[in-house]
Image 1 (cartoon, one colour):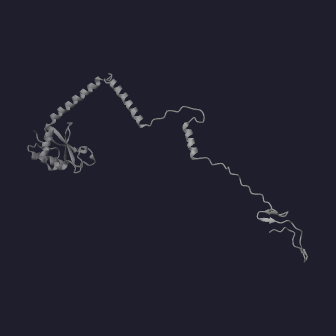
Image 2 (image 1 turned 180 degrees about the vertical axis):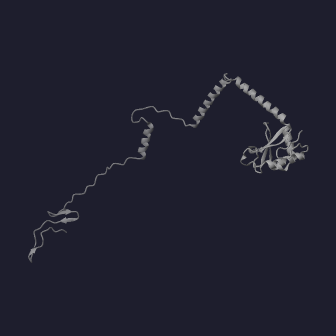
Length: 251
């Protein structure tokens, strides 16, 4: 297997030892990637890092493929190969380990299996598409069962709605006369019992007695309210000479 070949900005050459390959990868990452390259999760291509097994390994920030809480994840993918990328932290690539080379080698060596899996998926999808196209324009195979199921569904929906809504009373027959509506007549009776009309005044009205004179009173006597009027008398002449008065005396 051909070992990684360093990209631009590095010494270049073929590496036959893992330690040399790891050192070359660490040097390339330090030179070509920013320290905080995954902010805002925007996709940014950093270029081709190395070549392994005839496939170029491209490096970009992980963006949506980054792990939770990590802002330095980098994704290494095979150029022109629709295979999932390998995600590393930038610190992991800078520190370097033999495990990095092992993961890259497994990625490249697993391409034939990945290709077979893709071809099988394509074959299955084509079979499904052919089946759908063959049924185009034909009546539905289970149309009768579908109609029965829809009718049963409508029946159940009606029963469910009836159990939720209160039953509506049947319309009352029209009856002429004052008792056309028994409910209204009963309501009126209850209202009359709860709110009776004001009673009519059946007691005799009191009349003030006509003022009369006292029994046995002299003629000309009369009573007005609490006063008793005396009859008019002849003028009284004082011995000195003069009239005492001619008005009625009251006591």
